[in-house]
Length: 387
Image 1: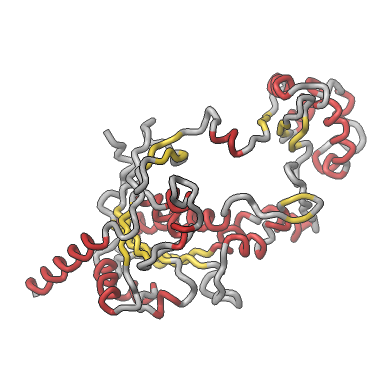
Image 2: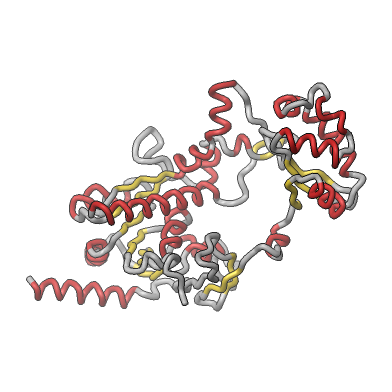
């Protein structure tokens, strides 16, 4: 029996002229909730289909982000195919697009015009830098935005900046768009009115940068690149054990600092020692503190260190590789159908009514083109008869 919560969007139709990651992330979450998502692809397909061929000959990105959708190939340079898209939007609840800036307007599907024509429609435009400002006309991909927002500047180590290891700007924008669309659907339920939503990759991650920006603006504090140590808390980071494995642990408050010194380091006097009494002092003397901590970890195996950290009431974890997370006891898996067979993906994060999710399959390129064209043709014919 399927959860009435997890399929709450049954009856909602989403038309998405989308590519890559950000918009497909948002629409895939709507599809997971039961919405009908009609994915409009170029005749050659969403270019994310060819990012790699590592999942049974298919792109890992595409398999992850396009389950539960209908793939419809349209050449929007052709008036006849634009007419099909127009008919689909006319009966849709949500329209999402993330083409390069200005493209959707040139095709005749700008959100302002659509909102005038269809007052109940919710439109969501996803871009790199938004609709205004000097960079609004530029294409923007994930790493470019990581760099522009300063995220790379605080990621990495003393040797230099680094990219966050997943497409965090795209994902953040997709998450932001998804939550905004849900709010707009609720607003429409109350008022009967649609909404125009604009989401940019830049805005989505700039919001996440509030802590280092506030620290810089109000105190001149410069967040340093700290590798796998926390830039604002000490001690908080990865330390190598006697068996070569690394353990991450965290001290978040004064009580934990006292317990750490007393029960783990076995140095209770260190608690109020000059340079270590509070977090800001410890940040200023991190090198000296790390030398003490590293000495203690070097005496213990990974298992012993974690056991003692737990006894001290501290949070801890292992510095895992991707292969480790794949086998992690807390990873939940769910099978998803694809054109090349079932793929075991990591399950969606939210759990509704303790139920295992049931996800609809990933479509082959153009798998629904003919059926949707027939549907649109029948709908237009019915309107002509009714008129």
